[in-house]
Every structure is written in C-alpha cells, then in structure tokens.
Image 1: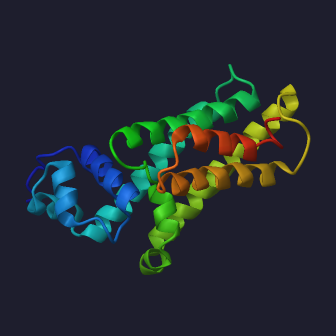
Image 2 (image 1 turned 180 degrees about the vertical axis):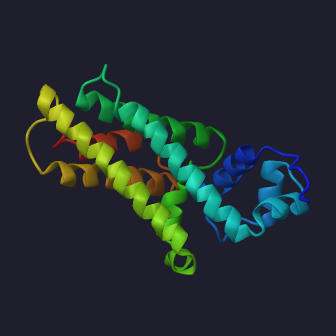
Amino acid sequence: MARPRTFDETAVLDAAAAQFRVHGYADTSTEQLCEAADVRRSSLYNAFTSKDELFVQALEHYASTMRARQESILTDASLSGADRLRKLVDAIIDEERVARDEGHAAGCMGVHTLMSPDLRARDERIALILERDLRERLGLLKDTIRVGRADGSIPEGPDAGEGALLVNTLISGIRVTAQTGVTPETLRRIVLDGLRSLLP
C-alpha cells in the first residue's frame, strides 16, 4: 500500500516549474528541485519517479497556469481588444520586473523547451503539451484581435491569425531578450513598437 504523500503536489510542480523556466531542463539539477520544493529526493521520486516525469508534469502545470492567467486578461469584457493586449504586455513586463529585482530574468519553460528539440523527441507528451498550448494561446489572441476590430480599438490590417503570431513572437522575444539584462522599461517600449500595426 502506497504511503500518503507528505507534501503538496501542486506546490512542488510550481517550485519545479520556477526552476525549469529560468534554467531549462539540462541546467536544473535534482538538488535544485529538492531545495526549491523543500522536499527530500526520496519523496520527490516516490511521487514523480524521475526528473523526466517531473519535467513533463511541471510543463503541463506551467502551460495551463500561464494560459489561464492570459485568458483572464484576454477575455476581460470590461476592456477593449487593444487594452486587453496592452494589459497582457504589462503583466509579462511586471513578471520580468519582479524577477529582475530577484537577480535574474523571469524565463519561460515553454520557450526553453521549444529551443530543446531533443526533449520533444525523447517524450511525445512534451511536443503535445507545447502544440496544444500554442494552439490555445493563439486562439485567445486571435479572438482578442477580432474583438478589437469589432470595437474599433484595433485597426483593420493583417489576418487575425498573423496578428496573433506577431503578439506571440514578441512575447517570446521579451523572455529571451530579458536574459541579456535589458530593462523592463526598454522591453515594454520595444514590444509596443512591434505591435504598432495592432496598437497604433
């Protein structure tokens, strides 16, 4: 009979995702994961069996959590379509500002994983998580652009799908560029300049 777990699994997944999003899979050690989650190695592996399994579950948790946060902004009916996009940018920049105060960039588990094709090749679940996450986030962005065009806050222009890809690309760029030490204020100016076709 399995022993009851003595830790909060969601808290462990949060802690693991926080390490993986900053350091990536290869540069995150089991010791770092145990320290961040405040659990013993034996407890960690009793629950997740391996670092690989913990990574997959942490990625799923991270993707769904981050997507839910973005969805709450992008479906806020009290805001225009354009203001939803601006609020999304500001939320991401705020994450980078908090992380910078802690001495590092916020990072992104999704971006790290996309840039590690060997991880996707090793476990098809990782590719499926990333594909579903991208599809759903692009869908939210497309709907937001359509809302903005309907309410007049976003001008007619490129296909909403291309606009969604533009926003997603700029957000990914924020995560990567922040790693070089660029300030949150500069990052915000850059991304808003990049969104001029949607946010004139």
